[in-house]
Length: 314
Ligand code: ASP
Image 1 (cartoon, rainbow, N blue to C red):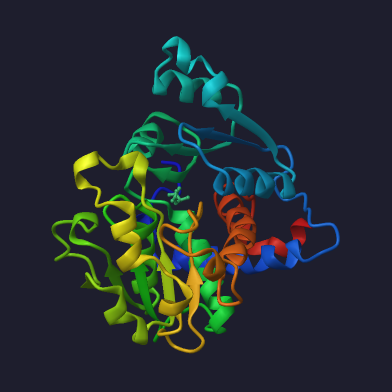
Image 2: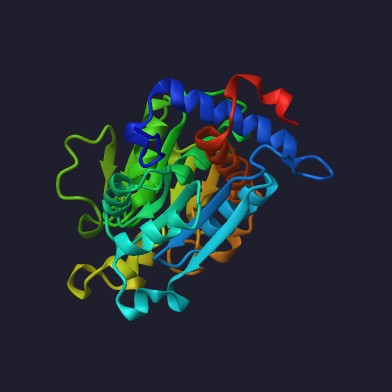
């Protein structure tokens, strides 16, 4: 049985520690004048994205090339999918071309698990529907650990995740990882954008952002996933913004050193104001930058030859 990185729930505490530890190694590599190592020379990493992406795809491709792997890029628009090729045939073709690992994104929850069951090579889930996006959660945790200098833990942090929780894979992965690492998470949004049954989620819940801000160390803002929302579910955007958009007046009510996060893409003026996104409290750019090291860690974790002797590899 090969190993893949499909969800936070699949990871043991030991796996999480190894990924965090490897991320530190690759931060050091990325700080070098020439941020490239031969660790995955001769390996081929394929990106198979059935849904649009800017940050995730580019950072995986950059991560692979900084590890000296070859990169195969599948682009939906110019692929044979438009001629009717099935998901299974496309994935098996990429494997037959010699990919050693596939990074996959798809709009259907569970699709990456399905492809993983068909293939011999490891897969990384780069987002499947509203289900999971594990490397986003890992890079968010690493970003907070740097910011709060909290080692490999997030103990004591109060984190509000705000907005469209219902359709968010980022929220699902982050709730699991942040709470396992010791943080307290409060989900905040209008009832229509919260899952109906949250009884099994290890979180607090509120429908009023203004009520929870004063407790927040971290305000994690989500985009409204319009691509996954049917008309009727959607309160009007301006109504949503009035109560939930993070603007500077609201942010001033959070703790003094509170930080703002967002997985991107940000829609200025809807869930976050431009001045908050660009403020010194915003970690949005740091999240993007840290994604490269974390994705190098994920690729190396699954494909690297000898995890115990990292230093001998470069
Ligand atoms: N980039 C994130 C994702 O792929 C969040 C978003 O699209 O809003 O899930």
